[in-house]
Image 1 (spheres, rainbow, N blue to C red):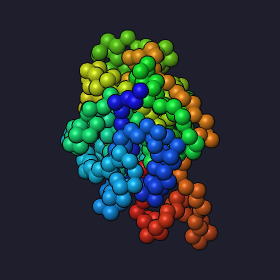
Image 2 (image 1 turned 180 degrees about the vertical axis):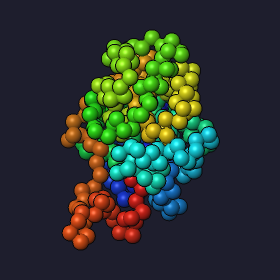
Image 3 (image 1 turned 90 degrees about the vertical axis):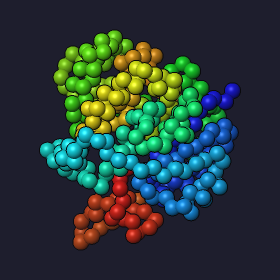
Image 4 (image 1 turned 45 degrees about the vertical axis):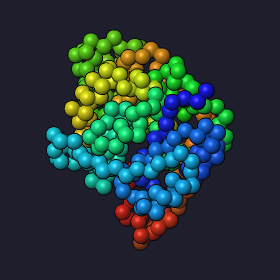
Amino acid sequence: MKHNAAVLMISGRREILPKTLDLFYNNWNNKYNYPVFIYDIDDVYSKKDISFYETKYSNLKLIKIIPKIPSGIKDEELFYNRKYNRYVKKKFDKRRLGYLHMIYFKSNMSLFGEWKCENKYLAKYDYLMIIDDDSWFKEKIEFDLFDKLNEFPLATAVSGIYKDKNLSKTREKLLKFIKSYVDKEKVDVKNRKLRDILKFEDDDLLTDLTYSVGNLDLFNLKIFKSEKYKKYIKSVNDFGGQYKYRWGDIEITNLFVHMYYKKGIYSYDLPDEIYEAKIPDVKPVYFWGKKNHFLRIFSKITNLFNFKKY
């Protein structure tokens, strides 16, 4: 039985979207025909693009939205101004503001209101798939990915314990926030490992938890529209973790599940030959014998130095 569900994609990479959508429809959505909403946060799609995609693909709508930094967050507090953070210094400058908008939007995916768009399109659904525009369905998936949301609050293509060296640089004050929230709300934390982590003050310990892959996650919106999540995400938003410290939507949503649900995240563990978060193969460009830092070479060379990394 088909679910009351939709697919949400936030896209800022117009050069790979055609292949991503071809694979997504040919290998999965042509069978189920779930509505697909593509949100253009970075204003990269023209009216001609919108017409093309909405004509070519069944049940698809491409929507421009105008993000803004929430009131109460000062410019000097934004993540890209935290020059003491080595990750910021090397890899996160002001051009990546769109990434902070994306995190804020995705972590508020079921309750959002400030940008005045999602309720109009998403409010009526019970389940939501959020998929990145570099997610490739390389072979046919013959089952409905929404099925597991009858049992779980969150499902994902792949899950794991991720130890990337930059993770600790994007989780500043996150553990302290979670500890304070658990104490204030008297949360009976369901995930045993999280209970153990909360005994300490070390943000790096959060890497010991299992997280969803993030570029293909499915949400039971009946849970993410609940009063529990409303209260939780309001606290996150009030703290400003997404914009100030680049707390990821993965951490924000997954930690909520780990706190409140013993039966937490279901992973399909899709193998690489079936599903892959993929960007086009590129070759490094050399100038005066040194590697150019812009390794992603796009179809339009004029856009090379204006690319906003998502």
